[in-house]
Image 1: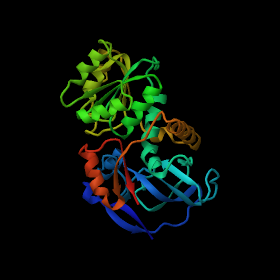
Image 2: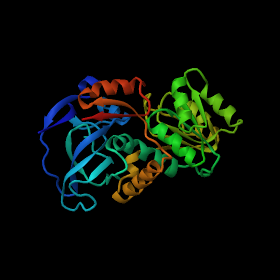
Image 3: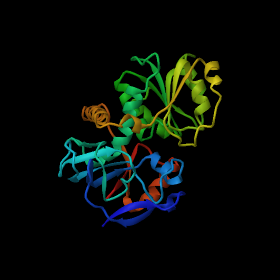
Image 4: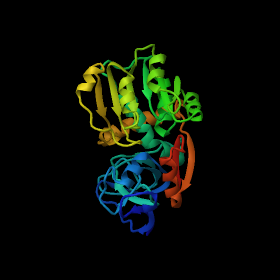
Length: 327
């Protein structure tokens, strides 16, 4: 028997219970992994509240790092004893040990410790597909402006550094002067405190009225309309989260009126649907982290038993950078 976090109904952080579960041997295409550290992400909140419904009872968590204990038939890229990390469906990383599909589990380089790996897999792969694979129709060139909301969060701080390495001028938004300073220290060219500044007007001022080629938005409802107004003609609006709530329905004609804009709703799990794609993206993430161009900021650590406290901190926007659960 081993410990895992489970919910029996959707709701607040109090719905998460630490329960004893039986973990057996991996089946074909599966691995059994003993976690050393676990990542915390906003998608975990969406699963807990039912915004992204799961079949109940359900286990939570999409990101982790640890040691492979056993592999099932057909798994050739991992073996028992390997250090490994992942961002993967189905949920279940909030646990000491789990059996899971091997597709998105990758061998972890010796130079990257377990805490760093657990803090960067989902967030780093997200930054990778946003900046490298989700680009406006006119492309991105060195010197181009992009707008990134929640720039002091886990994905945001990675994106700030990676964008700088790519030569992009990232304009970040955050909810305090301290968070803005953190974004600037991590490579953002400009930072806007949206609580006391009109981010649309500031973006227009920074870009001399031109607007940005792309907006990367994980906030959702609260920033949607303003984000569209920050785009230049043929710009791309990239929605990849709903921290403030889902984006309400809108009339497509508004995209024409605002400059023949493009809109896309992205998810990481479409990008890592195959082992080959997962490995290629992970290799690029590992390379940029090992080079020092991107550093992973772990600003909060909670014990697995304190997961409810971790969720409350995340939802109330009291966190910066990455948060991990320890065992």
